[in-house]
Structure formats: C-alpha cells, structure tokens
Image (tube, rainbow, N blue to C red; front, side, top):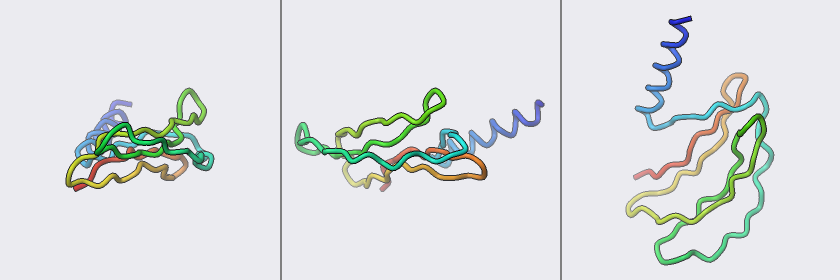
Length: 97
C-alpha cells in the first residue's frame, strides 16, 4: 500500500511541476457546454473566461463564465475535459506566453 501512495504522490508532484494538474472525474464525460451570454466587461483590459462543467459531489455542475483582468503578453488556453484510460479528468485553463 505504501508504494502505491508514493507513486500517486510522485505523479501529482510531476503534474505540479509541469503545470498540468488534473482533477479526477467520473467514468463518463461531461454534458455539452452551455451557451452563455457574455456580459459587457466591467472595465478596460478584461477578458472573458467561458464557463465549464466541474465534477462536484458525484455529479457535474456548471461553473459560469467570468471576466478576469487579461495578462499582458499572454494568451488564455481554455481548460478542457480529457479521457484518460477509464476516467475523465479536468485540465485547468492557464495563461501561456
């Protein structure tokens, strides 16, 4: 049992170092994305990050989109659900140079 725990922790740390921590999900994928009406930005320099499905308490729940202050010199890479073996995992969105 100890070796399995060590492997999981090591895999998590490798994911942290690579900047691609994924949240484990269920054995079935999320519903289609919802259509969102993008509100007017609250001010100059704001960027819209679309909503997405999250796995919470044994079910998918919708997390609505939001405006954030854009980062100069960076591009937003949206988060996405990926199938890995028998489960689905969520890869968080991130700012990339």
